Image (cartoon, rainbow, N blue to C red; front, side, top):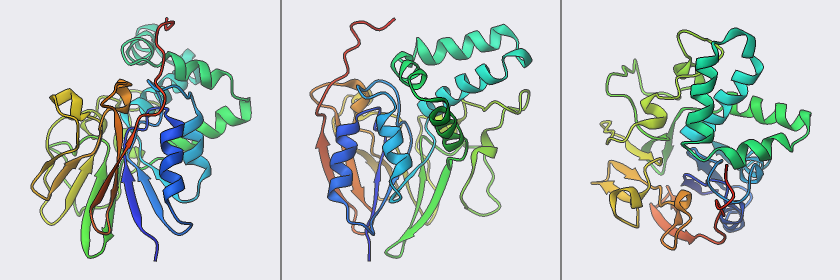
Length: 252
């Protein structure tokens, strides 16, 4: 029987992702819980690797969602105030280092661009798993404190729909931006989004056995940056070091 792995925040480090895939067997499964793009050296490559490998399922992260928001703004430019377009553009491409991803996307063929857009639109926001008799919730950042589950179940992009512009998304949602501990009775919650280095640490953060933050800072492109690969079957943890750093010296 195949094993189930979780990692987070690849951030355009295709070589690190390849190291993960090389460790896996054909019947294994990898859940990457968001942020395939931005900050790393490899443009769209890591995202497309996840798209093309049937062993992989990617959840949406805030960086993936910001990219999708910008692409939707381009598609619906005539239906949006310029102030909305400018704000979304600035927050992704300037404040969150989206330039490299934007440029890489523009280099893709039109058919490949559309494939990427459709893939991002269909990403899960929250995934519920049971592995080895243990129940897990996977989400990029957190479950909003005021979110009411009728029962705990998978959530799609519908929960992120913008109420004013239904073709856009609530990219500020706690599902992708929250930085607080989520606790759900009977479940182990696994998140990414907040690098350990953000809290002055280098390795995964956890609360008891009910909450794990497995983002170890590939986005920072530093000596301490690494990918945490967690095998849910036995909670075995492996760290894969950064291999190539992004060069932001010429970013706009």
